[in-house]
Length: 443
Image 1 (cartoon, rainbow, N blue to C red):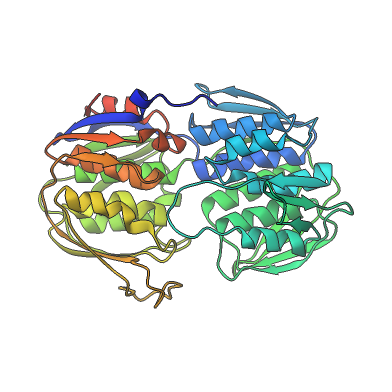
Image 2 (tube, helix red, strand yellow):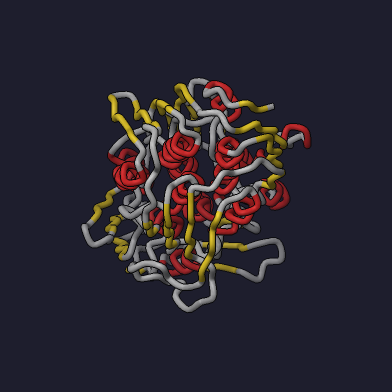
């Protein structure tokens, strides 16, 4: 993977102008990378379409190649072709070099155990937004019959010389990653697996659809229980990725914060209904069309709201960060209770420096049952507005927080310098070109 030059990791923004125009979103970051890993399960060719040109796709492509897989990426066409006819163990040092920028390697475990009988997982990266332990992943693999050696000096060595077998597994919290791990490991395991407390996000359901195309037997119950009946073999797939609901909501929030008007081509209503309800409550307008959704600020005062993030079908945690920037421009007191990641409000500190009035609290300012109650995490935010924002130097903390800072810079009066923007490339395709197309003053 090519390294980022220091001069390419800084964006200078002159804010204060509405973002107006049309941009396009393609496949969901949180699905595409997992579908690419699923291709490892079948000794054949898989074709994934509507793939965005983002860094996570590049990382997974490189990881697959390290394992002897042939990967062809036609970035502009949005097509990735994966031939997993040959799979081999990768060099530990090479995998470790790539894995620092992604948490994807842990999901290679199940497919590699089925294909090779062993897997090696190095230290994991990803955004620093709170505790994201892999204990659920490892316990799932153990329940399915794997042996996990956590004492290995360079990472975690996992073996399954006798293969994997079905098991009854319960997740104490509907973890997306652990649900994906179970699916990828159980589809070829001998016997039946029952996973209760599973995550049911749209990206999970699209992964289930891919696995079903490959020949897997998976049923989904209304009580968050997945039932997987292991099969002897799988085949390659051809699949069109669902659109990225997080990127679509991010551009919608940018339209609201900058008093803009953005048509997000490719945005899909069914996966965004919860967001659209909140967007309308704040005072934003939207128009759902066959090929996308138009989002705009209709004029007048935006309204304050109370939001609690939750697992699907609740308000998605990745939606709250860009929307908080828009809430700094709403008239009155807004409350956001974060119940998914305990440290997700770290991104608000630069917003306060820019002029926003945001107070963080350790208390649960909401009615949802919360894992962080009385655990000393600042996981509730009170935002008072409207407050004018002023440009300043900003360091990007994580993927979603970084795009939120970008929205703040575009909303603020005067110039801002945003450092570390390469992190945004992990999940936002061609965001610099899209900003230019919307009339943003950037360099």
